[in-house]
Length: 179
Image 1 (cartoon, rainbow, N blue to C red):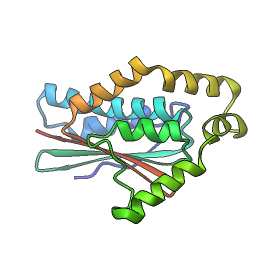
Image 2: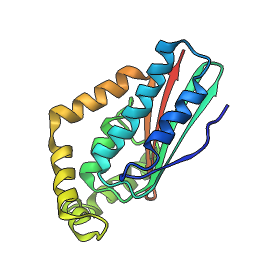
Image 3: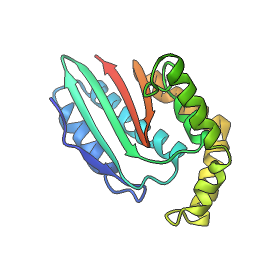
Image 4: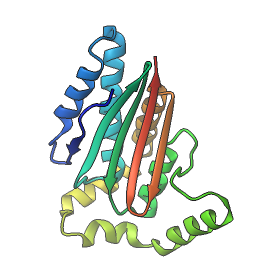
């Protein structure tokens, strides 16, 4: 079974809808498992927002097959090195699952990181979609190491597996929970 795809925005639009979709998909489960899935939904969106900052438009959906729940959150988003690193560290493997494998894939990842050096700050301050306050908040949230580690540990503790894929300006967070 697959839920509806929900559009998520930093303004708060879609948060309640994502929660309701999770509730609907988990309707037949015991209360503890249902609450567990709702908490995963909240943590995925929270982690994504805390690392990326402003979400212009992301899509959330949830799939269930034989007691295996797969959460998806995908956004077209340009990331700086700090944001890339924070998201990749949030995965179970600690790797970018969207990176091509082998020598050429590793070389491509190194070139992307080298080309985006210095863009982390420019990304916040040169984009009209970001106000000065949002930029300051994003920097604070990302550099608050204790909070960031807590966010990651909660999500990794709630799920069986978290994958991060960053490829061509598309960021996808996928989390799996099997009951």
